[in-house]
Image 1 (tube, rainbow, N blue to C red):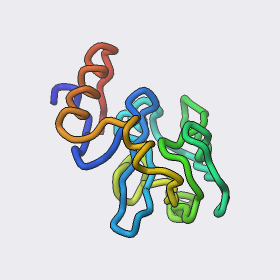
Image 2: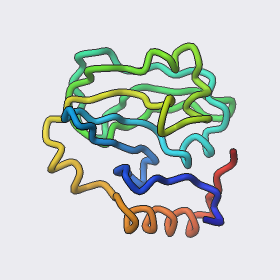
Image 3: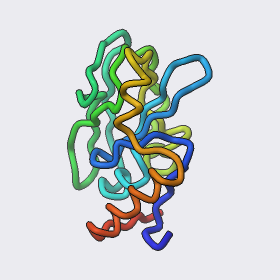
Length: 144
């Protein structure tokens, strides 16, 4: 783990976009940015998320974020309806930096077709190894 990046094996990663998805027991899917994304972006100062009830196609923006060195959209790795947004990060956007897989989650989606979308994401030990290979090839390291 020389890159210093935290990449839990139980998540599903869209490696090229540095976002994750986590299927929940109730059939919904949590979506957030990876440790890699927050490290590349720097200290997050503003997060604007899509409205509740919005239907998103895979790859469409789940919202935007702004840091001291970057402003951009956050692509969603799963298609579906936004059924919850993380209200806590509006007042504490740095949670995306300090806890990207926990309190820093972004949206909860009712997936349109999780079985299809999940096939396009990397997961488990093999998925994390694939992600780390990309980080090494691109010289990306995470800072905490």
